[in-house]
Amino acid sequence: MPLKPRNLIDESDPRVSQIGHPAPPWLINYADLMTEMVCFFVILYALSAALNKNVQQAKTQLEEMMKKSEISGEVKMTKDGLHITFEEKGEMSFFQSGKAELTPGMTKLLTQVSPSVRELAQKFDILVEGHTDNVPIHTGRYSSNWELSTARATEVVRYLIASQQFPPERLAAVGYGEYKPVALNDRPENRARNRRVVFFVKTVPTKFEDQGAQEQ
Image 1: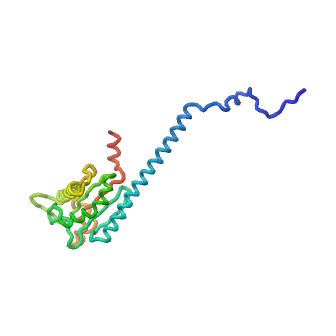
Image 2: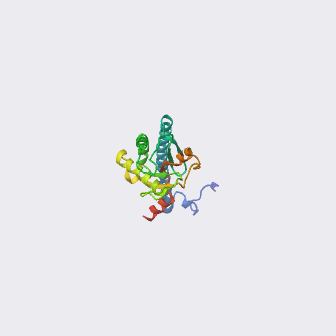
Image 3: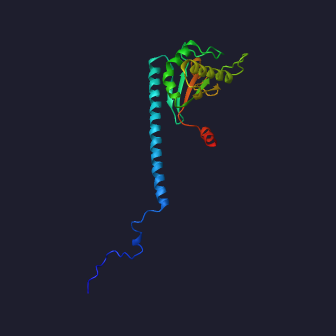
């Protein structure tokens, strides 16, 4: 009587018939989806890294420029974007008292910083902020510092578009008046710090912008 080998695979076993069969269609689709998602996030990461590099380069250039010139201010990176602040210093004034027209000193400053900022404007929206001190203003043209600061920010935007070839669709102007001071308005030098212009480079979309994009 021939010996029957033990522990060999019995092909009649129903469990054996499943070996080598193709995977169900849903599993193949799921694997394809996971692969595409990985590729998508890799591309997003690469784009984000490239954009962050551009922002960091501009930040470094502006910081070096401020150190070498008479420009007073700071360049600060936050979770929302890049904040480029220009403050009045000494005899350097951005605007005449109670007026929104740019002084020669302000146009010179904007001309100096425009190359670095304009490169960012090709990729990001930029909000130009106008700020004032708390000295009351009541003129025939401006009834409050709020209106004055908005007019000044608008003049900066107009100059950037007309003279420095900034893309208009990337710029916006806003005035905060005296309501976002960086120093107490107790001394002339502190009031000068509060009379400032800020370029807010929005490297991260706001919640409002995200909702608007979803609705569209």
